[in-house]
Image 1 (tube, rainbow, N blue to C red):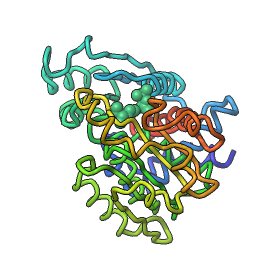
Image 2 (image 1 turned 180 degrees about the vertical axis):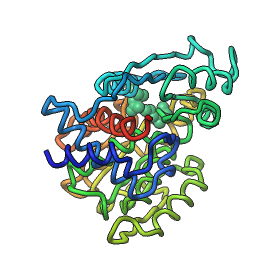
Image 3 (image 1 turned 30 degrees about the vertical axis):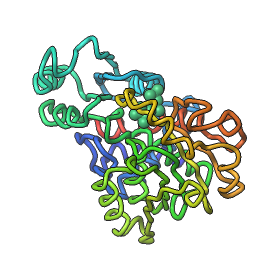
Image 4 (image 1 turned 135 degrees about the vertical axis):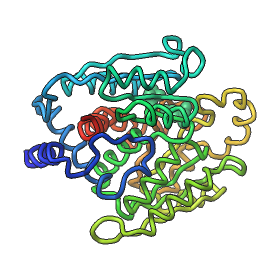
Length: 331
Ligand code: CP
Ligand code: NVA
């Protein structure tokens, strides 16, 4: 109950100074804000399970949910999350607004900004989010772009805290594509003192500027005890698994890269997380995947269905993490 009371006070007092801001990247947060959001995520989780309302807006807030790409988890958890906070969600699919083609992004943003209190958007091009944030006058939340997936990583870090008791010093091995999910993991690791070793085939490494930013964040004081994280990018999957507490993979072909699928199937084959590779991590390592999974490609059924797999906890925690984000950002 104390967590709930403290979280309520944190939200009401805006002690994290997030009110009115957008969340386009994990790098938009500082360490204090990241840990604050994770504490509020825990309170959202506890209040949901206790069937009590942690908070409800004084009047119903309206949130536009824009989806240029398909979604199960993000769509359901944002739509339900808005409702559970006492607001209304309007879902706009690609064929509804045809962003940037039927109408320019600045015009869409200035329309939505007149009617809604926040915009949540899943886009092909990260710059679309930047445009929505620049012109709408309301907080914009990244629900996945080609560059980042920050809400996923907030839920994932909460899941790691649940399973491992904290983040500082936790070793995460990433297998596969240097993609949007990895980018957010690297930045979150920099802020939280986690150690990440990412094994990516040559040519599929994460963006250099994100690796540099994550290392910069890692070098800064991280939390009260100034914990340092470490960020390594390697090509050898076996070496990345050494001493791993968490093993994380994602699809080899993200949405938007489908024309490269055949080549990627060949290039990523050695990075499949199967029982043999998983056995190289610590014996109590957990397996994570943002989902949807392509079983038999990046992960085998054996691993996905094992006792080490926490993929459905991650999915559940999207709801709690995104409620925390909306409660802190929306005016
Ligand atoms: N992990 C995730 O974002 O899932 P969806 O693509 O189904 O929203
Ligand atoms: N990297 C994947 C994540 C899906 C949730 C994609 O962008 O398609």
